[in-house]
Length: 377
Image (cartoon, rainbow, N blue to C red; front, side, top):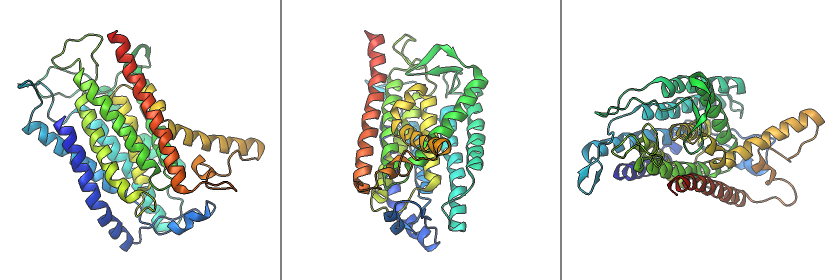
């Protein structure tokens, strides 16, 4: 747990310190965020706010991850003075999660850079964005499904992902085959990355919601670590057959710490935006954590705010194409509440949407622990 705490603190401290420096640098480079002219008029005042803040927290999360492993190597985990036989080196899970995080962030970086160069809110095309995310997800999906590697001196040759769809653990009768799982990983990464991207429309909204998701995966990962089948505990119904649960907790903790630090500068009025480099990387990492922790079907509950935001866009587009009418004043749904006679302030929308995200996160954790208690009982 020390490694997780230190990783979270390192990510928080570095992000707090580097984000304002990055904001000043991006401002000098005129890397400002183009604003949609057809959106809420209050957003026009945000034109020129530095973007690509995701570059900062991607970097600090990776640094914090490495710092956490240095702690594990220097101070191995102990219980009652006995050193636990737990992995301290980099693992297949780390390769999968950090790889997804960085490569999907790079896809977003290209999108951000083109927006800045064109001085227009449209970057790469939607098809190109999906293609980039799909290539990254396919590469690391194959790593998750087929790569075993090694875990220090332990005789464990499991892969990060299995052919089984999971809820709080693998569902034995829901086998989609290895190839099907790679396809499912591609779909999950695309869906979650675009969900976070659509949610990132108001100051601090996606940052705070993502932070809650990472905190949930920190709890899930650490609980699975303390009840791990691959460690010294016997393989029974109470343990979790997860490849590297400590790695899950470590990366989730580092990402949560980075989000805490970034939120200081990203909350209203934002001094920097995360851009697509941030939103796509966060969504990909959230999807990856669900896959690694074997909580795939729990993800729509845990990330319900992202699901709602995406659904609002799908409803709006479908309704307009079929009937020529719009269901919402503007989509994604957070902008609907900014328009009209009874419009809410941006801060009010963000706080209320955070409350929704918090409730859904708590509900997902409730399902996770209820399953454990059901088996234990």
